[in-house]
Image: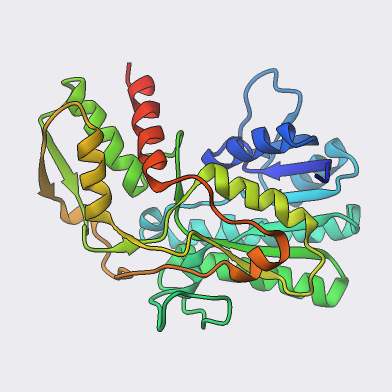
Length: 311
């Protein structure tokens, strides 16, 4: 196990919180930043990553770090369809500003950039490996690919130590209901508690996605600190896809209330990927990582989370 000092951007987000907890439990000295942070959290710093002066202040506050995990981003594919300018500003400009600031203040730090499988677009073959062509099909995916290119440039031109990770879908306790499994779980719990009619609103149930538990995903992020390979983009995924409709039926079996299903066109994308599953063999070969937590546990954790949150 390798420790060290780590700075996590987006530390107050869904994955950021899980990552900070995991890193701390693994022996890292963990600092975090986000647009806003809890009052009195001395290990967190508020920072707008698109503001160069603010980022300089962040790095001065953090001091020398061994690793910087860059999770901060506008992350909802659906929201990006309606606010492409915001996604480019936050995800691209924020990454550029962070890279430039790290080059000046912490040139020896390793930047672990969290990209997305969305950069692949509609697959031309399955499972998708890192040799698959990139073809981003929405503003979020475009912004993430631009962030990757920024990291590639900073590595080639200035020697900044960068690693790009491409996580496929991941979920678990604490995920916002903008994302499909969490959206289902919240509605089910609202039905259980009598807060809504017993009708679940759904989008495209035939789409198939490759899901990993968030705790397995942050374990992979930690293992990326050990990479010494010249390969700098890695898929993180389970290697299997599941239909959204099948996931919903598993949630139904875990629910304590019956419900019907109603299609909601607002929950469908105009340009959707019918199926995607990935190969994480390159990352596995270098780190030994494979997901360990079964898919059903994701659903159980989501229901438990919303049952507590909707008191």
